[in-house]
Image (spheres, helix red, strand yellow):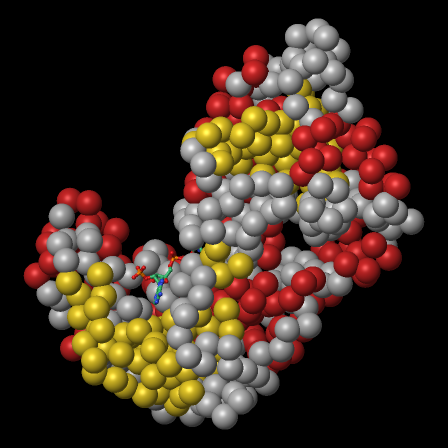
Length: 470
Ligand code: NAP
């Protein structure tokens, strides 16, 4: 065989999962010095992972990265296989057989559990389900959220919790020109939710939201945000954290919490009579130092029991410990938003406790030994943290390791790459789509959004998408 990565013996790489890390990995390979063939396989018809099905609809600028990813799909070395479930339609062994390397970039699809009694009561949901539902993810299209209760609770204070709280707090008028799915907007229009609690187990110096997201709670049309002034009083270790030179970002967040703890000035009337102060009908309450210990209800959630916490430990290592003091809150809806979690894929080692694929800088390992041919990038490699751009450095690190391994990759027999993928999928009668077909679907979505003033109206059923293609 000629040299691997030469024009007549391209390096053939399959990538599983078309989220940001999948695209960044493909782009790094295509822009390497080697001649490559990259085959990107995705379970859904639509590419872009959480940029499409996770990023909040009212954050259109973050979604702009889609334009960069679409450009990455243009080179002739890039092949897209949408609507293909790796593990069902084609196996990891099939991909290993037909490629020199396989990179798993399937993200973190599920959520962490609280592990408390009543967690599975009706009305108790994961944030990931709600986010996927309002973003039109086909697998979550039929989920139902009962918004008939006045009080909703969100556990966790990261940016996902912020997204969920904002979507519950906003009016339909604030959302209707975004790409939020119509079915979700219709349900939100009937929402009776007016008290939204965003509850953290630690204090205001440890909030996981970023300041930009937290600031948005002061800009909601019909919802005021409150923090109890007693709860922004810090212990010594938290003061030290904020005073530390690495504490700048957290200090900014803490200051915003303090702003929300100030008495509210009357709002200007938004309608006649203009002189009457306007009272916003919804309220967000950001609360600290509480952990849910039980969800109660007769078949459906009625009450959340919290235990008050105290912090202990050195600065930056403080953990929350229960004090034994309990508190009850009547609520009909709860979202746990305590972090995403990866799911295992047949044929790929998995670290169950961490919810990631064990790896060394992207080289997949099993029992600390590198598994040849298998690589990983993105949230399934490092856990669910960081912004979209974080995945670029993560994918680049993986590709750099792969490049170092090039001499070790099997170059004894020809790898058939995408030719063989087509053969396997055709034999199984899988209706997979290529990138040109995705672009047809994409154009229809954009067209369907225009009459409503939306950037797009997403198709939320796979059959609808496939029905557009001949
Ligand atoms: P996250 O930032 O890790 O936040 C998780 C939250 O859950 C933290 O407040 C954490 O508190 C809490 N938590 C964890 N375990 C808990 C438990 N057992 N009981 C109670 N609370 C618990 O996760 P995320 O919000 O899912 O976001 C994931 C990543 O996506 C983050 O990097 C985030 O910034 C990013 N993201 C960004 C945007 C954006 O840029 N607009 C939007 C969405 C998501 P502790 O601090 O005490 O652990």
